[in-house]
Every structure is written in C-alpha cells, then in structure tokens.
Amino acid sequence: MSGLNLVISYRYDEEALLKLLCPRMLEDAFRRVPGVNVFHTGEISEAETDVAFNTLPRGDIAGGKFTAWWDIEACNYQCPEYFGMDIVLVPYNARGADYPHDGRTFFFPFATEPQEFRYWPSQIRYDLGFVGREDGNRKRRVALLNQLAKEKKLTLLRTNRVERGEPVSRLLSEAQVVLQCSGDAGDGVMETRFFECGLIAPLAADITEVNQADMEWAAVPDKHFIAYRNKDELVEKLWRLLRDPAALKKMRRAALHNWGTRHTYDVRARDFLRHIGFLKGPGLLDFYAARPPCPA
Image (cartoon, rainbow, N blue to C red; front, top):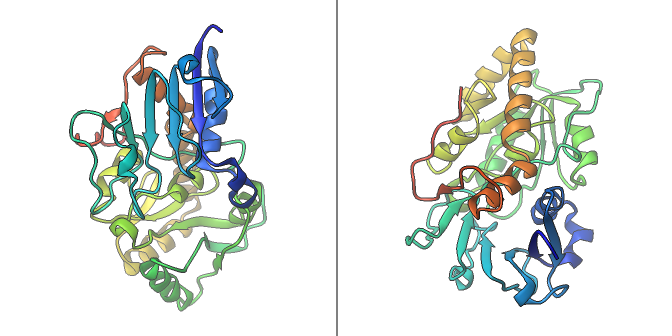
C-alpha cells in the first residue's frame, strides 16, 4: 500500500459517553491528508505500520516503525510507562509534570474542529456563558463562578452536562462572551475549552503562572481573547467590551482568524506529519524550549 500507514490507538467504546474525543478529531484530520492511510489498532500488523500514534483513553498500545505517545491527561496523571516511545507529545505546561529531556518531548496542544464547534446565529440571552464541570479539583473555578453569580446586572449562563459539539455550540452562541476558568489540576493549565470554544464566541480566559507561556503562544491577550487573573479584572474588561459593540466584533473577527488558521486539528495533523518528514515544513516545538508568542 502506497503512502503512510498510520495506526491511532485509543479506547473506542468510550465514544458513546464522551463524544468528540480529541483523538477522534485528530484521527479525522489525519484521514483528510492525501497519502495518509489511517487504521485502528489490530487492523494492520506492526511490520506494516509506519507510525503508531498512541494516546488516552487507553486502548491496545500500537507499535510500528515510529511510535508516538500523546499525554493528554498530563494535569491529572502522567503515563511514564509510555515515555520510551520515539516521540512524546505534551498538550500544555502542568505543575509537577516531568518528561524526557533527551530531545524526544514536543509541544502538541489541543485544537478545535470547525465542523463541530462553531457559532450558530442565535438570540443573545447571556452576557457570559460557562458550560463545564464544578466537581473534583475545580475549587478555583467554583469560587469564581460563585462570585460572578453575585454580580449585579450580569446575565450568567452556568451549567454542565451539555453534549459537546453542536449542542454546546448552539447554547454558547447565546452568550456574548464564553468563560474559560481553569481547574486546580496542574495549577491551572491551558484547557481543551480554550480551543474548542474559540470559534463560537469571544473568550474570557484566565492567565495563570503555569499557563501564561502556552496561552500567549496560542493567542494575543486582549486581542484574541479577554485575559484576566482575577474576578475584578474579568468583570472590568468584560463590561468595557460589552459596552463597545465595535470592539466586541473586532475581537470576534480576530479570534476567528487566529483559531481558524492556527488551532484546528487539520493544522495539528499537518504539524505532526511535517515533524516526521512526511510533509515538508517546520516540525513541532521542543516542549522545553521557550514558546514564541502568537503573531500580533
């Protein structure tokens, strides 16, 4: 078979529960690249496998001529048993996380899928919208949401258990701004929500000591998203933007361009394929190297 044989492994039986898993969206992006033949674990032999791309939720680990591990739960737990693969991919900085220092560890963030996460023309019902969990290690998030709920005149959407993709996109399209507030895991990492909601509406996203370099690589603070460090800064910047419809539209346009050109799974798939030499172009960033800031 001509082309590149790529096997991607994760546990498919979780799709019914989780829907739109990050590995699933990346797999679809790999399939859209001409010359890449995508298989699931067990469909071809290791001898026929040019690239084995392994990640969570953990399925049958695949081997091949070149092996990769994407450590997508780094803020909650690492999987060092797989760090012996040819390349280790990490989605963000996380406090306490440690990876190989021998040149095999690279920065591979989450992304968005424009076919699933996008703006739906809607009647605006909320100033600020948040959909997400408030249990477990999310005390900082809960504290902020409780403070925002007390803000006079602020119409806040605060809910969870909304199916990802079109349902959550339709709901968040009713908000003028979407809220990102990191949990406590890893001391506040750059989350999937930061990417997936970027095409729905302008974001208000929290900057932490841990995620600052990653966030400033991904987007320009206060151009592509509202950057805040505490509730007071968030509220002040939010009201300033909401009182200026032209500025809100300008941020929306800038965000759509940034996320649409730099942060889709098609972009991530091509970046990986360039890194391994299948496509021409620059490779991935060394995880331990300084992050270049997002182009203004």
